[in-house]
Length: 124
Image 1 (cartoon, one colour):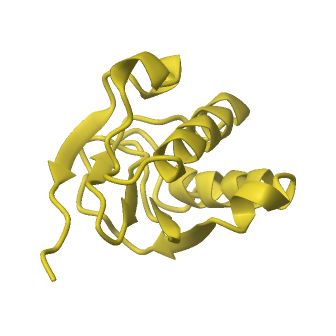
Image 2 (cartoon, helix red, strand yellow):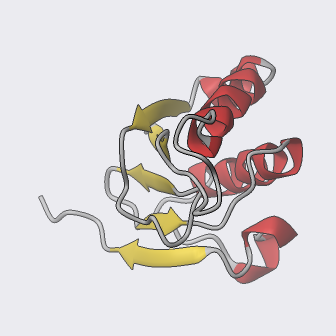
């Protein structure tokens, strides 16, 4: 079952000048590289840049979702290698579940405190 990582490519911090490269776009590029370096994970995860996740008060924002699993929106990420590693570790744990609920003990440290919302799976 494919996992989708939706990354807001337009996310920016309030102090960023409008003409600057958007931190969200930087995070997209980092995740592209991270998935390219992990073909086993890339086979399970589809990266989907999106113009806006409407989580502007908590940039950089991402969503993790999959059919028949819980979905999550997370925010307050920096566009850096540590975030890419954190998201990669969380994606591995999420992909290993059948319901999308990763036990707290398995959360990477960088995920804690970043959850914005959780959505139940669509009922078919």
